[in-house]
Amino acid sequence: MEFNEKNLEILTVNYNTPDYIINQYKSIRKFLGNKFIINVVDNSDHKIKKRGKKIIDLNKDLYNISVEDNNFKIFKIGKNLHHGPGMDYGINNIKSDYILILDSDVKFKKPNFLKDCSKKYIEGFNCIGLSITVDKTGHNTNGKGIKYIHPSIMILNRKEYHKIEANFIRHGAPCIEYMNKVKKEKLINFNNIKEYFDYSYRGTIKYYGLSLKG
Image 1 (cartoon, rainbow, N blue to C red):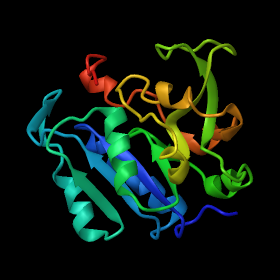
Image 2 (tube, helix red, strand yellow):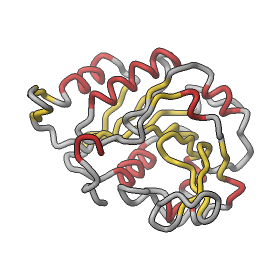
Image 3 (cartoon, one colour):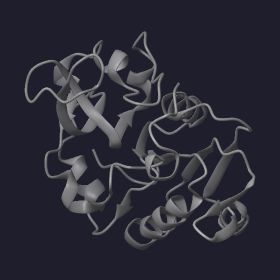
Image 4 (cartoon, rainbow, N blue to C red):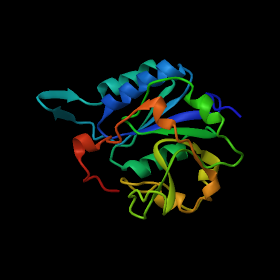
């Protein structure tokens, strides 16, 4: 089985960081081409913001892309759902069999990611990504605790997602309750995932801190 534009769409969540999304968009088009549908759940407040000494319209350029590229879709929410519920909203509104979920600050830096992910495919898998273990608060436990596919870069089986009686529900570690209910063998580790991407694991934290709750 091969992950491709016919069975997979891309999902990311934006909260007033469209510059990240635009850079991500450029990297996707560079390394994956123009056929993949990119979905953005926009939690932004759509106000003019000041970063440093520069005042900018945060979302204007992002929405311009959606006008120019029919495969770039934005779900304008009008309020901040937070990260977990934002992902859940996207999952529930995307119809592809598989979804590549990316944090807003993730950028591709080389090709063949999906080709190599396809080699990890097993029938009925739930998630493919970097596997770690965490406690119930989301802190890394270095081998003991809940098996957790980090949602910064993750391929999700949409049909399997809907079989689990839990959703992605919070901002900090949005998948804990969900993955705690998934059979461990359905959480597929891709331990060299980092070599395909540039990312900081910081997302909105750089501008908005850790005070976002949800």
